[in-house]
Length: 408
Image 1 (spheres, helix red, strand yellow):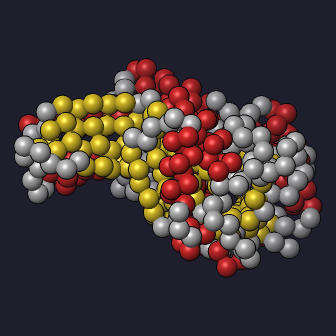
Image 2 (image 1 turned 180 degrees about the horizontal axis):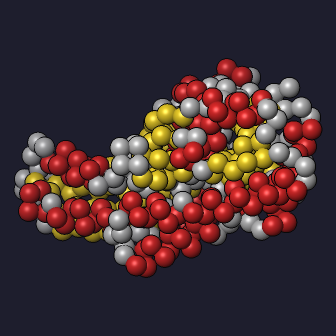
Image 3 (image 1 turned 90 degrees about the vertical axis):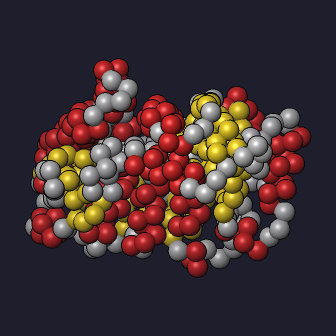
């Protein structure tokens, strides 16, 4: 007998037939003798609609009320799935984030989990009940307000709950049957990975791979939660996210990721003096705008240009924040470009191989793709390019690094 947390994404619970399919999968694990908790997302498209309504009313809406609205999607799903499980003879009860409770900080819209008391969930599972838990939700105790964990936050909920109940495994069910070397919709010859290291998956998730949310992988790595990615619709082996030492042969590059969710911001003629960068990025941090790639040009005439990326969803807030600080910071203008894409190559094998970046730059050059910004880490190289070249770049790099599998 094992203790398993099963997480089902929006496409897996998109309609009543799919919810019945989820109930059948859960029942199968219960009948195998396992203790099971289930975490679910909102039904496919529901969160997008809720977000759209908030943005149409006010692009700079109150983040606390935004959370009240968007948290409702998961509440619908947990009730429906609990009913579906009861219908097939499985004792189940729905749980919202505040009922556990999943305690978070007060960063509404992208709250961080601070603690989860798993004792009541463990007690219910030991009694044979299946807790059906709303992903994405938490509670900020200081003001007793509902919080949400950011897009993809149900993955984080699942991993955090798996850690809290000391689960043997956290199974993430989605519309793909595992983790691939890149998006198979762009590259049909992409290969499914049997295993991938936490660190590689963290980098891939952080630069655009949609299979797992970044913070969920970060928490899984920290808590050593074994994560398996599986298909909700096919009975096929999935992909395991594990410690690096469990992978016998490390490839130089494990995957190519892309993201169209970023926007490029350039501050023109910023005063070239100590403290300016702290002023710019301190103001953005206070507004909860996450900054990624950063480039600062060589100064001239006591000024410099500063370029960085923020999430497209944060672009309006970032521009508003910087405009309010313009007099203090002294820059001349803000230029924003949302039509960009970030392309990244990731692999733990980069640590011991030279020339990985050069292969990337050469492959893009041969396709006539201009690189706007470059950033690197120990196991990753990322570039910012015009969004119109996204698919061409991904295909070229997948071939350049020898990741193509056999033709279908």
